[in-house]
Image (cartoon, rainbow, N blue to C red; front, side):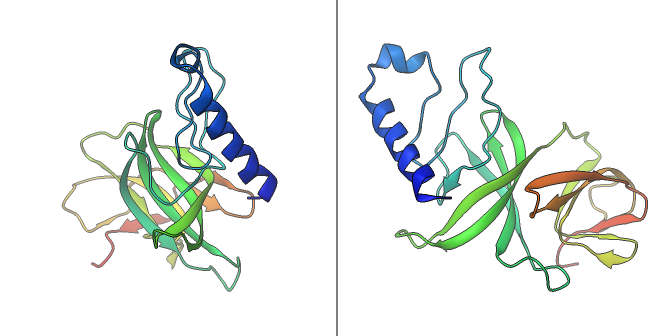
Length: 185
């Protein structure tokens, strides 16, 4: 995030605080976390959290789980992780860049890409960072597996994506040859 964007976000927070409450209700609210934009009223074109910088989520966001993505094949400098987050706009997986610790001692995170989690059936589970493709572990895969919830490994995959940090997106990938396993089993 450039200094200009950080400065712009700080100005936006100050301006939002200065607006009277009637006018502020008609627009998306800006939280104290840098860059957080809350859902705008119906008809708004605001659709994502990409670019959000945070160390602690606002109270109406809930962290569900996460996984650190280790470098793959010696590539990609930098630290990335997945964060499964319940947001006012629904459940999502965020691809975050992990930065240095903030004054609170928590890592500074920037959302690089988001993936809306489709509704899951009772027999489906979401896996992040614990799948393999063609027998090789690929920690960038996020997948929805179908099967018994007590199984530690699943090869019946409904849908799968691969995080692409360079392009800042999640790419839909074929499910053939993908299997996922509960971490630590």
